[in-house]
Image (cartoon, rainbow, N blue to C red; front, side):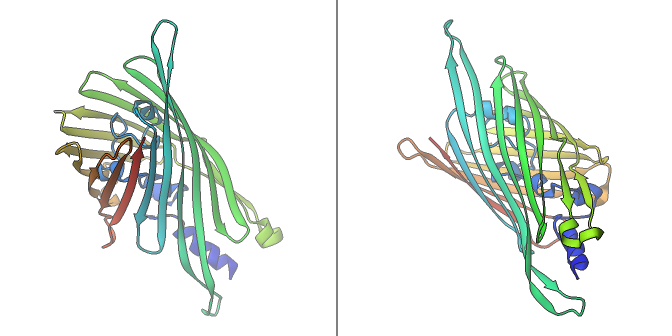
Length: 321
């Protein structure tokens, strides 16, 4: 019975399994971190404004001018959950020559899982409801090395539960670079999930029949650019390649009506190496209002998943101090 349940969990713990990369560990970290990025097709590797996490590129957080707290909740079908929290603390140090050294730190959490899994025995009778979870804790640092170049790193700790007494943990790192070509154009580069893996030990569950299984996260390399057509209209593009032979294009565009309201559209997961992967159109908006020294912003994103009638919807509340 336990072997059957473990097999079911291995299927459910990945949010999709249409391509090899989706069946690999860490699928929850590749869905999108917050509503701004998700509504722009997760393409904002080189964007310098509206930075609220190191998820898309740790080198970006140095461009956040104010202390920022961010909380996201995602509406998903099939009893899935995806929630995130992060904060950014900008640091400015004034040197004796009058120059200001800019840096930033960020920390946060990604929480995901599947609840209400119908556990059954070999005779098909219900036993109890089961659940899985995958969590990622991260700490990121970034520094501005010149007026045009920033470099950042994101240190991650993953902890997951597959079944009773079957858990795993591991460390990983992301490295990112952002280069400002001019006031309108910036470029980004990132290597994601360096040396990141799970290692499962089922000896406590199966005794002598148990074993150790190591599952590596896919190594992902991303390049991209952002272009500001005007002070109100922005365009973003990224290209993502993995060691699983995926080649994915992402696009996003944003229009700022005024200081309080913005609208966004995008396209995620245009896999040029596998047309059956399915693209993901995205849409979203932001509304903000300033109260004294606080500036809360509510961000909304909608993402159409290609193989289900139920879209991904995400809300992100951002508060700047």
